Structure formats: structure tokens, C-alpha cells
Image (tube, rainbow, N blue to C red):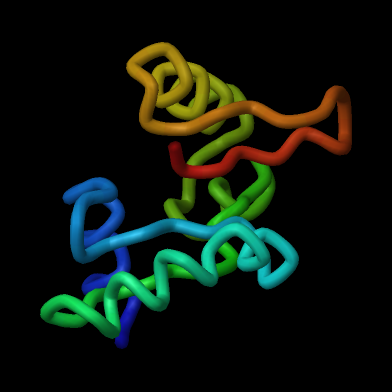
Length: 94
């Protein structure tokens, strides 16, 4: 799966055949998701979707102020959650 395909899935949002997990540790809850996918028509589980302002800047080639504005907007519309404070802030898909 390439970056373009992942971005398309993220934009699609979670549903009956798509689940987001921040880390493998979060999969403890996700075991039911995997079983549900196996018992239905399959699905996609995206793991490791947490990101930082720096990672966002590097990926999209924007300055810090633009990244902060974009990420804040995603939080406002409920597409991501902001976790932590200061340099430890990470954003995860909701």
C-alpha cells in the first residue's frame, strides 16, 4: 500500500471495513475488529497513524505555522485528536 492509498483511506474514515489504530498496543481492543473483519467481507486496519507537527511539515512541505493551522483545523472538525502537550503533542485519526 502506498502513501496515496493510505491518504485515501484516511479521508474515507472508519467504517465497517476500515479501522484506525494508533499502535500495536492499541490492538488489544482491536482483536474484536480483526475477528469482525475475518467473519465478514474482510477489511483494512491502519496502524501507526499518530503523527507530529514536524512529521506533517516534512510530509507536506509546509512551515510550522501552516502545519499548526492545518492540524488545529483537523481537530476542530473531529478528524484528529490532539494528545499530549508541548513538544510531546501527537495527532491521531479519530
